[in-house]
Length: 423
Ligand code: PLP
Image 1 (cartoon, rainbow, N blue to C red):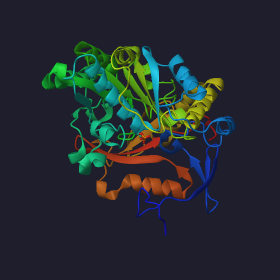
Image 2: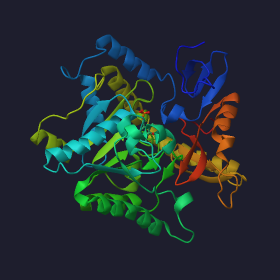
Image 3: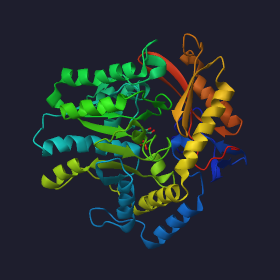
C-alpha cells in the first residue's frame, strides 16, 4: 500500500535505497548499473564527494533566500560560470528548478521581448513535431509529443509545428545531407510566411532530440539555415538543451557543434546532475537590454528560483566537469560506446539505426530493417525492454513515440561522464 501516486500505478517502481558512482542499490540489495543517468540527468554519477561537500557547506551557511529580497554568492557565481562558457551573445542567466520551468521562462521572455520592443502582434510559437519541451502547459503546448499532449489539448495555448530533421525516417533516398537540411529548414520559412512574418515570436527546437525520438541530431547545415531564417524574419531562436546540453554530447552545449548561437537557451538535467532540482534559461544581451530599457522587470518568477542549495549543486557539478576535464572523457567514451553499440547490434535484424553524439546514443528498433517498419505498438516493446533490463540490473531509457504517423521504439543510453570503457 502506497500513498504516493507513482508514474505508473500498475507497474510501481523498485525501491532505491542508495547509489554511488554508476550503481544503484534497491531495498532487496540488488545492484543496477545506471546507463542512462536516469533520464540523462546524473552526469557525475551518484554520491560525488565534491558535490556533497559543497551542499553540506551551503546548508550550514544559507539554505534559502527569496530572490525578491536577496541574491546570493552561489547564484551569482553559477551565472558567471555559465556565461563564461556560453554560446556567443548569451549574457544573462535566469535560474529555475527544472527543464519545464526553463522552457516556460524562455517562452515568456520571447513574448515579453516583443511587448517591450513595440511588436505586441508577435505571439506565435513554432516548434517541431518531434520534440519534447516539458510537461507544464506552455512547454507541453510547444512540444510535439502527441502521447503526452493528446488529452490536454483543450488546455493548451496554440502552437505551430513543422517537421523535424530526422534523417533515418525522413531523408529521401539519394538526397544529400545538404539537400535534406535545406528541405527540412525550408518548412520553417514556409510556416513563418503562412502565419505572417511579423506575428511570429519564436521557434523552439532541441539541437539533439531526446525524449521523443532518442538522440537525433540534425544533418548538414540544418541549424545554420534555421538561424538564418529566424534572423531574416526577426524571429527569436530558442534552443532547448535541457537534455542534450551541459556536456552530454561532448561539447558543453550541443549547438556549438552546429555552429550557431540561440537568442534563448534552456538547460537543466546535467546542470545540477540530479543533486538538486535546477534549470536555467540563458538569454542574449539583446533581450536583456530590451527588458532593462523597457519595464526593467521580467514578468515572471517562482518561489524557489535561484535556490541557494540548487545553485550550490549546479556550481559544484560544473566545477567538477571543468576541473576533471570530463568533456574529454565524454568524447572518448562516446566514441567507445558508439563503437561497441555498432559491434554488438550493427547487424541485428531488429536494429534499424544507431545514432547520437557523445554519451547520448540511442538505437531504434524495427520489425523489419529493410522497410524500417516499426513494431506493433500493442507489443509495448519499449516497456518490455525496460523491464527486462532492470531485471538484469541495467538502467536504460527506452521510449516509444509516433511521429508523423510512424511509430518508433528507441533505447536511449546516457551514462554518467565518469564512465570507463570497462563499465
Ligand atoms: N526539455 C527537454 C528537451 C527535455 O528532455 C525535458 C525532460 O525530459 C524537459 C524539457 C522538461 O524538463 P523537466 O522534466 O525537468 O521539467
